[in-house]
Image (tube, rainbow, N blue to C red):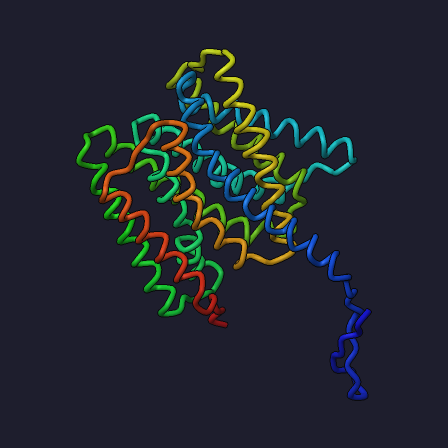
Amino acid sequence: MRVNRTATSDGTRLEPPTPNFAPSEKAARSGWDGVARVALVVVWSSGFISGKLGLRHSSPYTFACLRFALAGGVLLALALIFRQKLPRGRHLGHLSVAGVLVQGVQFSSIYVAMDRGVPSGLAALVIALYPLVASLVAIPVLDERVTRGQYFGLFLGLGGVVLAVSESLALGGGHLVGIAFLFLGLLGISLGTVHQRRFCASMEPVMGNAVQLLAAAIAALVPAFLVEDLDVTFGAGYWTALLWAALVNSIVGVGLLYGLLRRHGTSQVSSLFYLVPMVTAGLAALMLGQHLGPLTLGGLLLATAGTLLANRVRGFRRTR
């Protein structure tokens, strides 16, 4: 065991001891960490596929509502079993707002877009810009600023999105409406992320996620009831897609995310999400028979390069 040194009043520096793991244990931890990274990308990408499959049996808001309700109910039951307290007052309100934006607006909009015929890979590409867009939104809210390198990466990524979207817009009005909903979803997760960072930093993962998912379910229930009349056809295919979206995407995916964040921090983990559009496009080609045109594929590669570049340069700095 090694003792790190930090400054004290007499000039001595002491830190809590850092355990020294045996080489075999380090290798095992590194191996499982690699598995968790791969699993996070695959699970997150599969959410676009499960959504597309679920839309074969259900309307978009109805599918989103049932997904949120099922996942939120499971997490609430787990939180109560472990005797976690339900948030109250302003904290409950802030969690609900973040949940409606991050979960409700984002995924409902994605489902509407895919229901309009937008390919899963393109949907994943637009939403993958959220770390950068959220950082721009955070400039006036959280007193942060962006470096020149990050601006360059952002505009490179946006150029890739424009290139990819241009091919889809030529396919008809349905795609145009779908693209508009994708950017609504991007705005929702970006604003929700900033709200989460400012007001919900101390959120307990299990109970907090349960509250956010249930708030999103209530928000999605309104259009599902008023516009879609809760249009759903229950069957084996529907239940498979719903259970995967609720239990694997909403619970396992978030669990992997929080686990990696605890080990590595935000910057390293966020870079994994830039791989999601490419993986989603591959899964969609294999499972759904979706094939991207040359402009969309080129835009996908360009946007991925831009977001990776923006993530590698020096991070955001507070202005005061």
